[in-house]
Image (cartoon, rainbow, N blue to C red; front, side, top):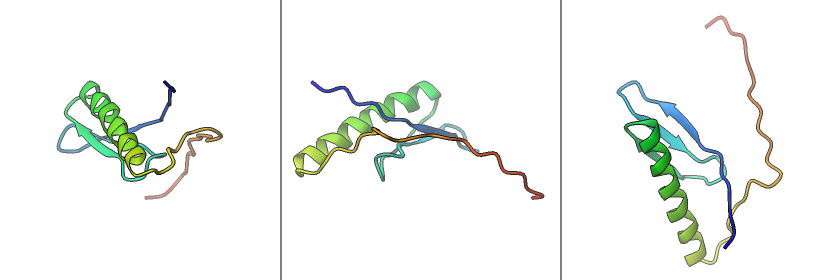
Amino acid sequence: MKILRYKISLRKEPEGGYTVTVPSLPGCVTYGDTIEEAINMAREAIQLYIESLKAHGEEIPTEDGVLEYTLTIRTNA
């Protein structure tokens, strides 16, 4: 069994809850009412995404060599 690690992004929604995206897995998006639920939903979404890739004989993306950086931009907006 191979262990894969993926970064997730949680965005607090104005109407409540959190939308989760997985940048390394295009289209892998889910939602949870709480941070804990959102993380659990992300785990499940990633597992299903990878199962689908395997079933279709597609390559499973990894985050090997991926760098993450947060930019701060000043604006007059």
